[in-house]
Image (tube, rainbow, N blue to C red; front, side, top):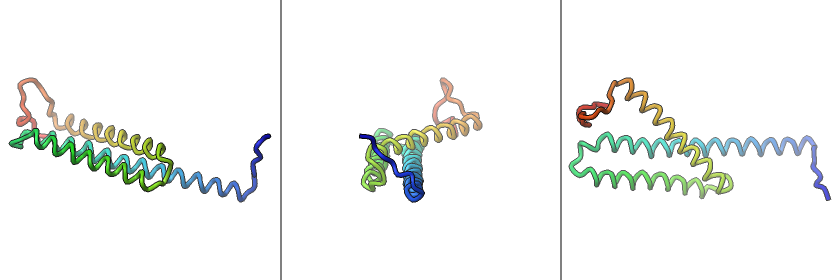
Length: 131
């Protein structure tokens, strides 16, 4: 009727090893998501900074979007195929990592913009802002 648990030392070591392994895999997935997020949103930042230099900006926006999306979805699919954890856990941890990458990149880039004194004001074009 009730489940019995084995509280032996060998079983405790086995459970501790599994827990440490799961934690390390989770941290690896978070770091993978973090790097994917930095690549995706860093590419967006790069594209938007160079937009005024290109003859056909709409074309470059589309190419950049497809390229960034291919890297993000390809990396996520590759991580799912590695089967290091259940699929829902992989998706959750990678998504949290991408969100963390976005947050860190925004904080870093905002501090750079604030230190440079470049603030978007009405009447100031992108060419006048040298970031």
